[in-house]
Length: 97
Image (cartoon, rainbow, N blue to C red; front, side, top):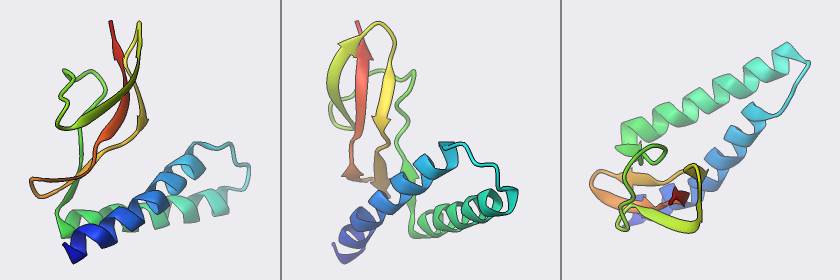
């Protein structure tokens, strides 16, 4: 449970790094630093057994996904994660109708 609580807190950091990677940046050295730091976080999660929940293009599973609206095309608003076979956070998705 302690590992699960720790990973839950770090997911917000992971989300922030992903948004930073998507933001336009003209400073290549800064961008490379953000990419390397993000890769380190991903590797640490991998070592802990944390995996991302497949969501985009997948069949909706209420055990793994949290549908927030219905749209023509599926969309992922927030990635979900598993620790081994335990759900840490469901993927927040828009499901296609």
